[in-house]
Image (tube, rainbow, N blue to C red):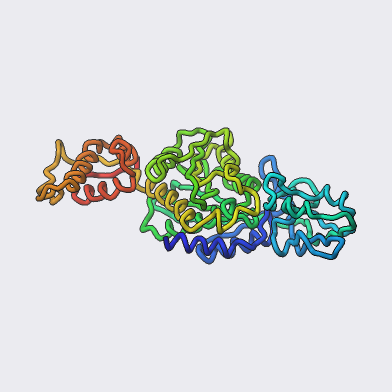
Length: 428
């Protein structure tokens, strides 16, 4: 639970930062993450750079934005809630009648207390978001509108953190850092990913190398792929897109496009043991960066482990997606554990081969209990089940599934048998 509380506090630290596709909010967020991951590298890609069929957009900066009512009250103040301003709003200053202003206002009639999250990345416009309740209170008259923003040739910024393992083969984890103050989507992703990267960095000689990227959604993954695709194709053997991993309501899984990768298998194995009735979605339900990582011609083995899926919980993309009622320490801890178990499954997924013909003499090695109890016979039975499937053709994950046990429980038993020279291991 301590890690859950730590992650929740980290999310509170990141909460007020105004993140978007580009800008100082992204840089500040990466700077905070670097405090947890000192080896994090930060890259800047100039506006106008090609990313396959896309182009890196102009950088966006906001100093202030608000509306003043005819009575002089300030509403939709960006400094109080960064969701009030439509993302990538162009600068504007002027007086508008309420009827004109309404064309630039966004609210949710079905969620009257929520401020919606609205963006206009690729078409120049300006606008404000407010609750339907507040919108219904607006009176006729002249409204003063102020947006001190700037769009200019700058950079798209992303972070990358690499943990070298014994093998060049890589496990790839990606999360996005382009959303402002919303908790499950998307503070939970970078927070949990930071702590997973910290966990991996503390492993003694991991088998795989691990690459973590912190990017803006869509244009960030396209930009990253356009610069690194050959390397990723050669080296990535498994991976996960990390999004919406912070609430307590559900666990869910979205497959890779192929649906048959080791990432898919591990994700389902983990969730079946920690969640039981998890939500399993299909490729038709995609909507995050798995679209880019699994695109035809890219075809990386990337699956997604989530708590409540984006777009499937009521507070999604609104101010109600908060750190009080939606994302909790327990929720974050659950997302963290699911990804941690997935990594432990991948690390342990070697191919054991028995060294003895027939069943070995377990008692002479101290592996058979001298006192028979229900628990002791259960452990011996599992050890014998591991040995019977250890023919060099079945991986630890195969054996765990045949034993109907989590791979992270089977792995220590495999190690015990290796230590007693009853098994040898190979990577393939």
